View 1 (tube, one colour):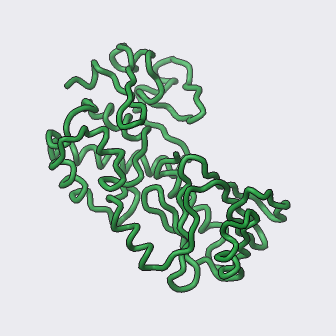
View 2 (cartoon, rainbow, N blue to C red; view 1 turned 45 degrees about the vertical axis):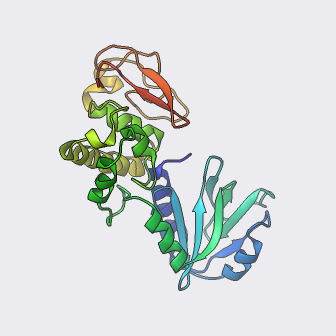
Length: 269
């Protein structure tokens, strides 16, 4: 599932290509056909993101709510648009560009009130200017749940996925199994600030890189990471490989139905 930086990048790309003008709206698959007919020819005025949720604003109070889930894909292209396949849930077009949405978990036309309800149920997003990290910490510090699980709870903090949670905990030497109630205010402030910086960099570069300058392949004289997820990382999907800092073996385990990665030597209980 895409992490929050990807959704914010998509919002920027939608806005850059389509905001401020009339947009052709189609649903070749047919599952969004009625809503597409209502929106066809309307102006896209805003592309907004909160965590893993994308919102496209048309006219007053009409929003397309998109959640990619595990299988959703977005593909942009330059006009003229080729004939769409029958798997395209939503296609937007204008004179210069087109974009196809395929396989989302959610693609629905909602009201402004319904959009506000989605925002209310999500935790603060490190990529949003309106984010309040103290509200997230209030939930963390009251919980006996592990900090690794809490970082993946979108009601606590929105947009953090498996990569960012593994990497930020490693960068701050925090045992992923530590209960949230044992995370200090200073540690939380450092985690939040780091997520803000790392995720903004992810938006800019469209990939996740978490290693510090002294641990890059060039600095360490090691081969660059080769992985479908791209980016240089410390522990994510590096199980059984040596830690870049201590040389110990990176471990993996199942936590809340997701793979957890950490270095037991660097992230001691």
